[in-house]
Structure formats: structure tokens, C-alpha cells
Image 1 (cartoon, rainbow, N blue to C red):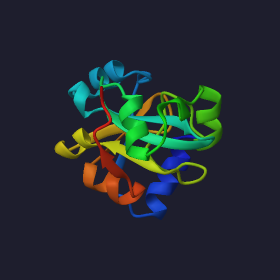
Image 2 (tube, rainbow, N blue to C red; image 1 turned 135 degrees about the vertical axis):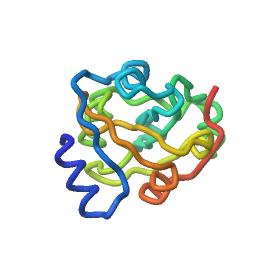
Image 3 (cartoon, one colour; image 1 turned 60 degrees about the vertical axis):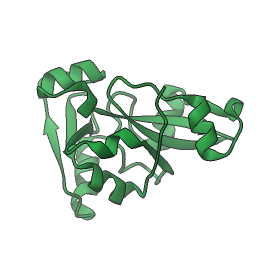
Length: 155
């Protein structure tokens, strides 16, 4: 899948989000923030975890790292059952490669947890479906489309 598929998903579902094509690759938070001229905290990362054999999407802000112990507690499972998905598994679960992954529009909807810090921002920028695109949207729209649950998930 690519940013055209993501744009189709946005259009079909009436999502208030804009894909921003860029002239540089934005596979890291720092690169994305620099290309957009925004704070690293405004960049959201869509990360795939595997929990008891099932894929789970976790959205976190900028340079923050997901605390697996907090994630496991939020899910009511043991920490050892929460694993970071390999790039191949993330691609298979979502249809998008790591570094370009949007928080929605995947091959099949994934249960999504979002770090509560995302709610405090007015505008966020997430993966735009390719390494040279980002997507701008509000946290409210992110929660509306994904049906995400908010938790304190950062280290």
C-alpha cells in the first residue's frame, strides 16, 4: 500500500487529514520534524507490537519511547507477552512499511492505543503512507477514526 491508498481511505471516510508530499525521506522523527519545520513532539509514530500473537498499533509522540511494562499493564497481560513487531510483521499487519506507516487505513483495522500526551497537542503529523510523505491531522480526528484508547505508555 502507499500514500494513494491512504488518500483513498481518507476520502472514502471523510477524514479531516491532509497528506503532505515532501522532497525528502522522513523515516525518522527528527527528519520528519525538520522537513515540516515543527517540534519533534508533534510527530506521532505508529508502532506495531505483537501481543499474545496479535498485532496491536501503538501511537506515541516524537522521541518518546513506549514502556513495555506500562503497555502490558494497560492491556492486562504479562510484559513478556508484549513484543515489538519485526518490520516484516508490521508490513504484513498494516500493508505499510516502517517509517511510512499511518495510524489508520491499514489492510485490516488494528486495535489502537495512543499515549495520552498526544491529546495535549493541537495538530500532529504522522506517517503519510510513503517515506516521502507525512499526514497532518488533529488528535481528536485520530481518536475518532481509530477508536483508540488513551493510556500513559511512555518511558
